[in-house]
Image (cartoon, rainbow, N blue to C red; front, side):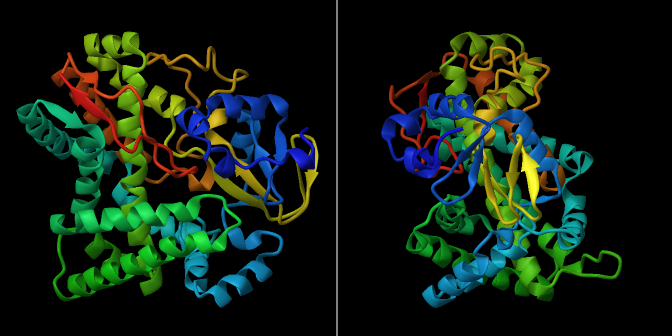
Length: 408
């Protein structure tokens, strides 16, 4: 066990460009040091797959920050700083809600994201991908993030919610700022840009809801307005929260799955050639790319009762940072974990989390990843990376290339 003096912070560590470019040696170091490492924020970093898996599935560990020790003091401070509404929303969001609210919210929204409902969207997803690749082919090159990884999931979730295409870029800007609120930090002032972006998004979706109340459409926004769950409806705040969550989560992680997946295939040319020779491997390939380079690197949980983890007693209110990316390369679970193997079948990765908060959009993300990556590698068999060095996004919770240029 590392000493308190050796307390770790992934957010701080990733400020080092070398670590940002390849954090996995650091994750391995954490994992080898011990199963629970003290963090700079008074909690613990959970480093190994078995403990991460257990925390994600154990109802005694909540994703709601209000269970943290000292939450009342934090709440008072953020109220004084003028963004208490952001923290209130975080306790209300389905991503962070506890039962029974979480159960009710998820049951209402999940009808649109069942594997069957999402599978029926595959032809439309394939059509969007082909259209984007047609444009790239005409140019003779592609910036993967801008030309494929971003427009595909944004178009899909926007069509689902009824968001006009003219508004995609503005919403993208807001989302990029908003996700920074997920990074662990003791600098509350660094949250201000995220606060402003989330407020702007709430105003935008408030106007969209008002429009759909006047003119209902064949979209998810209209369905959410009308949704009833055993006589209950979404409150107006819950409706706006859910739309923000669906739009942000509906594209931000998938962007990084696609762009990061394409990058990792190019860094492992034998696996890229293998997929090009056998397109049927796209299912296991997508799962392996999720394991090898998960878009979500860490997630947080809080102990709601006194509990023991990895042989250590934890007090109620203890915060845990679950190291998903490190757990996905745990040699106790994965054979040759540092090897990318697109045919890997025993793949118990944690890229989509687990337990009651298992990613609602996982079926959609999988299909978008399969169609985008699968069609790209078949369409341009001679494609190559243009730039030797990759610039990474400046977030620690969400990881992916900021830019990725291909030519053929």
